[in-house]
Image 1 (tube, rainbow, N blue to C red):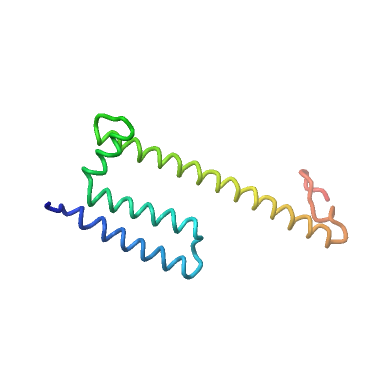
Image 2 (cartoon, helix red, strand yellow):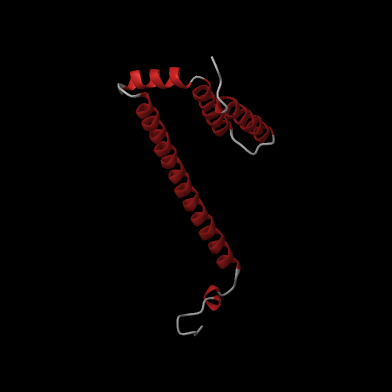
Length: 127
């Protein structure tokens, strides 16, 4: 079995990112959930690079596609949309948390001042 250039480069690149991932987890820059997800991702990419025909044919057979390339493209798109969904949920959750935090800080500051209305200027510039 002759290895192509990408079959050497992809596993080395994956190994680099896996080592980086473990180091980030050790210094508490990553949570266990994200670390496991990215480890599985890089492992899967390595397996597809090392055994492209075997894996793509098995995926095509399992999903019922006639062509292995179509199966890999569909699976990759599915994972991209799934990841995009989770990212958008995370962004929305963080936006809500920031909004709640800003409101809480504003309420605490307005309670600390003697005349909260004197700090706000109306549209016409009057106090």
